[in-house]
Image (cartoon, rainbow, N blue to C red; front, top):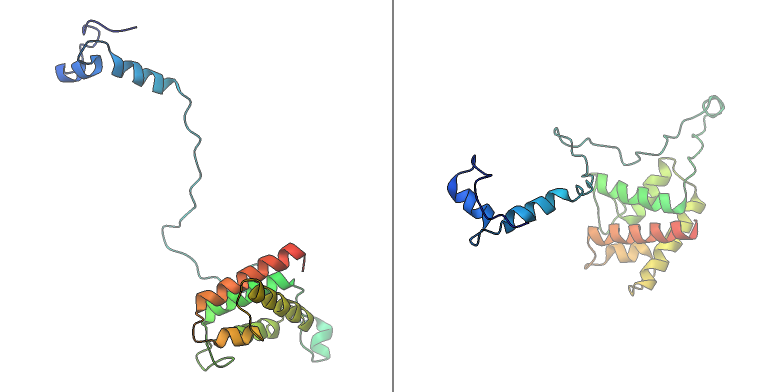
Length: 186
């Protein structure tokens, strides 16, 4: 339906009427706008929520229960029973611990609280998450990932202490090992 006269658009200024009608008076722009208006509205993609006031500091063990000593544990003066975690969760917790306290090479920990890979695993175990068997299983997964990615090492600690290794490399190693352990159900 080409539009040949400009009389139906009296409320619009003359240059806008000419634009809507087009140079040849065909009204192509108006037809395109009408077509676009008839299309359904695009699906709204949800954006991530960002708090106006900033982010909240969360503890490194967020999402996992805190180990609590029972009455019998207190009576016998023994530590609380460890919270059962999978090897994948142990590796994720170790990565979070390094992120919260800092990373170190050449020692398990320092006075500032920074830790190496082994120190992070020891700290996660000392805080009551997992058992020594969980840690051993997690370390086997670390070794598997190191060898599968072409970075052979005698231990994850040797890889941690290499001069070319950075904190991001350690986090990536822990993430890949956690994903592998989760895939295997460990």
